[in-house]
Amino acid sequence: MPAPSAFLYSGPVELIFEIRDAEEGGFFARALGHPIFTEAENWDDLPANVLEPVALHFEDAPTRPRLVQMHYVKDELIPVAGA
Image: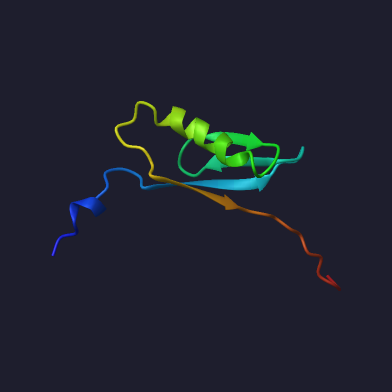
């Protein structure tokens, strides 16, 4: 049985941004699979700072993402005793 047409999407459904701490403070965001980069001084400003370049990047595209996921990645080094 085929899926209802409401569930058939042409193009990307979700755009994922990798969010990392910026060296100078705040956050740095980059889209996976697309040349979209942005930054923000705090977490509250980040969603708007992400959506603005997404809108510009997909402005003339026939399809655009329906969702944007912000995936926060934090690198942490843990020393191992006796190594």
